[in-house]
Each structure stands twice: as structure tokens, then as C-alpha cells.
Image (cartoon, rainbow, N blue to C red; front, side):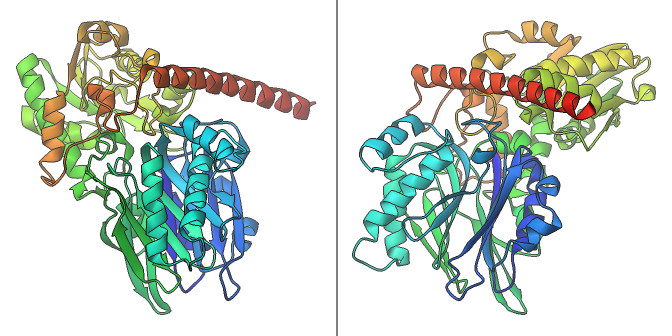
Length: 510
């Protein structure tokens, strides 16, 4: 899961990109990077700064001063492929030929290993990291070189290259690429799994065009949302701000990731014509119907959300069953999102640092805790225990999403089945694990109806973590084994990183 943004302007874009990345910070807290181009007349000189950490920590005044130019792109990263602890795998990625390309990517390529071999043996291109983004960049670079051979680089030639990229790569990808001296290219996978939208503004110096993962990054920086980039579509914005667009995939179909609406996206975003906030309200209503058919609402004294993403669903559920809605947990906003923390140990430790119970809302009451989803179960287990320690008589748990039973291979950090509390467990077994007195889950079909009713033009949803259906059709048992092995190495890297930090602190302490 990552957040990406690209801008074509007539004025310096460093502050604009920084502001957009702050608005997308929820999509990645591991690393951040910005590249700008210019200010020479051809716009061909790149200026880059990237590092591990959150946006406010990565970019200081001295860094921002060095990001010159009126064209640029940026990314906030949470890693799902490659080495999570390597500074060199922070995006953007750069390759000097053809033309000079800088690229950011949100998603995950399911055939990255095959492509890496093809690039080495056939295309004669060197891949220096384990990142699938570098693989994607080099595939695009090769196809651009082939398409532009003996002809000028026009939008038609660029779209030809993107079509070839679509034919070669599999998985999920929303991409923004800066082509030195030419403009900004954005494209989305043929299923539209990961989000990407297009906006503009009319400033005193001329038109400004922006692409970003979520509409909140457009609206929060003073731009109008024009539309979403369609699945399989490529959009090229030249240096004058003119927009060229073409469908480059053979059989595009819109299957956005339903987990964007469940958890990943900000509630004030609109993704593929669907208000994330309204989607969560709808899921709360269908969850209430599920709860009423499962247990008498009279047993519940109060409905309490697990902040932040579950609030709309919890409010709607409380209204539907006629019970009071209360804020029972105070969130420390300076602790990262536990779902996207790489290691189980780090997630578990951070729960009590992140949330604190208001005892008066729990004491002597039967409380219904509502969460957006239950993935690994460790956070839910800790929160149920916190509610009991705060004096709750009974603790019920409801999930606005169905059980997460299957690995995700399209860019969400839940790649192995062994980490999923619902994998090969019954609802009763999950209830016992988290220690709740009752556990109510959303139904898969109800979730699809609740979100899908907001845009009937959708072909469906990518919901593999709930239903085990992988829409790209290229995911095998061997892929899951490889992901599990990669995940194991990633967690070992986390332990090594912690050890190095501890040793460094000890040395500095004398």
C-alpha cells in the first residue's frame, strides 16, 4: 500500500507535492520521496530526495530548497515487496535511458520474478534491488525504447509502450512516471485494483494538472477532481498541461480493491465514483442487520468504535439498533497505524501506546466494539482485554468487514495465510482467540451490495482476502510459498534492524 502523486505546473511544485504527500500519509509511513524536474528550459534535470520515515521527518527546509522545478512526483511507501528496511528501495526510482525516467508505483506485481529474469536475459537491463517497482520501471523503459525507435516521442508512441507494458506485467499497479523534457505519464492496471485520479486547477500562472491516489490529495491542495483514471487507461500530461488519454488495455474491467473502502482510504475521499464515507455508513447498516439476526440488541448497552476507520460504520449500526454511540477509546495520533506495521511484535506492543480506554464508558456495561476489520486478531485481542480492564461486564465485537481468510497479493500487507486469524478457523474459534463474549462479522455478499450499490457501473470488486478469488488469474500455490518465504526474510530484517538500533543507542549512550 502506497500513496502517489504527480504534478505539472507553471510554478515550483516542491511544496505542493509535500502537501499532497501529507494528505496521503495514511497510505504509507515507512518511506517518502519527491522528484522534481527543471528549472532549465527543457525540464530535463532531476532533483531527488527520499529516505525512510514519515513525510515531516524526511523533508527538511534544506531538502525542500533543493527540489527545484515546475514538474514533479512523490510517494509515501509502505512496503509489501522487496526489503522493507533498505533505504535504497524508497521510491521514486530512476533510470537514465531512454530519455530519463523517474517512476512511483502503488501496488504489487505478481509476476515480478519472471519479469526480472526476462529483463536480465532478453532485454539486457540490470535490476539493482529486490523492489518490483524497479522491475516495472525497467519494463516501461524497455517498451518506450522499442516504441520510440526511429520516431519522435508523441503521446501515441507513449500509449503504444503502455499497451506493451500491460501485456507483460501482472498484478496491481497505479503508476506515475516523469519523462524528462516531455511530461508526466500515469496509468492503471486493466482491473483498476489500486486507485488513481486526475484533477486540475486554474492558477494565476496557468493551468495545473495533478494525479494522485485519492481525491483528498487533490481537494486538499486546491484542485478540482476531474475523474478517476480508468482501468487500463494511460494519461499523458505534456509540459504545457495538455491532457492526452487513451485506453491501452485489451479488455479492461473495473474491479477496485474493496479493502480501500473498508480501511485503507481516507473517509473524505471519493474512489471510482464511490464516497468512502458513504460506503462505510452502508457497511454499518448491513452489519446492524447481521447483528440483529445473530443476537438480541437488548443485550447491548453501548456501541463503541475502534478509532479511526470504523467510526462511520459504528455510528450507523448504533442508530439502526437504537443504542447509544460513545467514544470509549482515545487515540494517540503520533503512533503509526498498527495494521501496516511490519512485525507482529511491533503491532502488539503499539496497541496500548496507541489507544487508551475511557473507563467511565465501560464500567458495568455490556459494550459492543465495532472495528473496520479483523486481520491478524492480535489487536482485537488486546482491545477486548483493555475493555474488560476498564470495567466492562461483557464485551461483544463486530467487524464491518467479513473474515479475512486468504492472503492478499495486490499490495496489502497480509501476504501469508498463517498470519490471518480467520484462516482455517471458525467464527467461534476466532471469538475464543480474541476473548470476546460474542463476535459478529459482515457477510461478503452484504459488503459487496453495500459498497457496489453506490456505483452500479462497477464490474465487481477485488475481494480476494475475503473470498479467495484472484481476478488476475495468475496466482498459484507456488506464489504463496514465495510470498511466505519473502515475508519470513522481511521479519528477520525487522529483528536485525532493531538489533542494530539498540546497539547504536548503546554506543551513543557510552
